[in-house]
Image 1 (cartoon, rainbow, N blue to C red):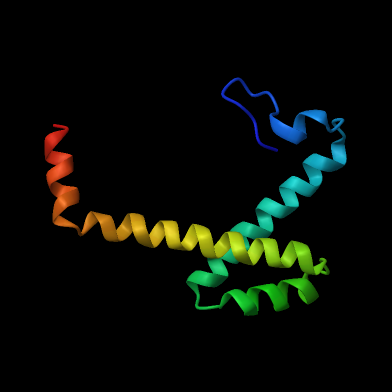
Image 2: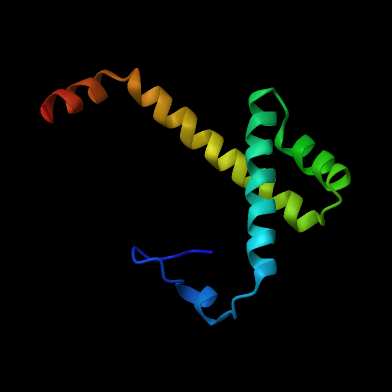
Length: 98
């Protein structure tokens, strides 16, 4: 659940009563997301992750879609960050901070 800098829940999550099952579901989601990232690095597409995870892990379409979408977003962030290291302007920016 989203938390502020002091560890307190924020937004609509602050109104949800705490229940142990929320932690279990959150842990499962994080595990599936990490597995999705690994599978994407092995060459799976967003659609493959969505369809395979839905049947393999017996999760609803919304969960599978959310995981596949997050995996794509994280993957794009990794690629963008990685490509910025090869950018000459990035090198100049780094030199400016030294």
